[in-house]
Length: 464
Image (cartoon, one colour):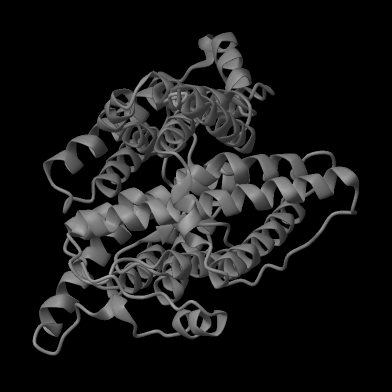
C-alpha cells in the first residue's frame, strides 16, 4: 500500500483538506471510468434503499422526527465525501449517537422546554464539537483516535447494542398503541431499567399483532440480507409490514408513524438555527459533556470505519488520512445539523454494504445521497404508514448486527484483563451513560495496564 505523506505544516494540511480531487479518486481512471461509475451508482442505490428505514429508525430512537434522519444521512454523506479522508466511507446516522442525542433531547425538552429548543441546543453542541474536530485535524491529532483500546471499542459497541435493543421494545410490544387507544398514560420510554420495569408492569397491554410485525420485520430483514447484500432487506420487510398493517391488520390497534409524528413533509431543506438555554453551571457542564461525547464518537467511529473499509476493500492504493477524516467529520457536525439534521459519522454496516456492492470511489457516497433524497421525496406520503413495530424490529436487527461473536472471541484471546475491560464497558455504557462508561473504562484500562506492565517488567540483576 502506498503511504502518502501527510503534510507536517498547518498550511499544508489545510491545502490538502480543501483539495477535492485528491488520492481518494485515484481508482477513477480514463480507461475504466464507465465501469467505475456504474459500480459506484449500483452501490449507492443499494445503500440508499437500505438507509431510508434505518435513518428513520435512528432518528425516532433519538427523539427526533423521521425526516430528520433522512436529511441528516444524505447531507452527512455529501459533506463527508467532499472533505473526509476515506475513499469508501459512507456517512450517516449511527447507533452510537442514539443515547447521546436522545439524552440531550429528553433533558432539554422536559421542564417546559420545546422540541425546537432542545434541537437548537443539540445543533449548538454539534457545531462546537465540529469546530473541535476541525482543530484536531488541522493540528494532526487524528492518529490518536487509534489509541483507544480495542477491548473498550468492542465493549462500547456491545453496550450500545444492548441499550438500543432494550429501549425499542416499546414499539415492538405495542404498549404505546394500547396507551393511545385506551387513553392511559403508561409509557415505557425513559431508560433501560424504567423500560424493563414498565414493560413487566404492562404485560396485559401488549399488542400481539405489533409483536408479530416486529418479529417479522427482524426475521425478514436478517434472512434476505443473508441471501444477498443486493437485496434491500429493510425496505422489503418494511413494505410487507406496512401492507399487512394497512389491510388484514388494519383494525388491530397497531400504531403507525403518523400516529406519533403526523405527516412526513418532503421539504427537507429547512434551515434550523442553533440556540442556547439560559447559561447556568448545569448547562455549562452539559455542553462539555455532550460536545465531548460527540467528538469521541465522531473521532473513534470514523477512524475505525475508515480502517475497516481499507481492509475490506483490499485497498492497494493510498490509505485513508486520519487527519483529513477528522476535518471532514468536523465539517459534517457543523453543517448537517443546520438543515434539520443531527450529528452523524462513518456508518460501519453501510460502508461494508457499499464496498461489497462494488463501490470504488467517493462517487458512491454522492449517488447514495441523491438517490436517498429522491426516493424519500416521492415516498414521503407512504413512509408515515409504516408501523412503529416495524421500526422497532429494524432497530433490534441493527443492534443484533453490532454484536459480533468473532470480535468478542478475539478480545477473549488477548487475556483476562482485556476481556474484563470489554465486559466492564459493555455493562457500564447502558447502566450509567455513554461518556461515563467509556471514560471510566479508559481510565481503568490505562491505570491498571500500566500497573501490570510495571509488575511484569523483569528486574535487572544486582551487580556483584
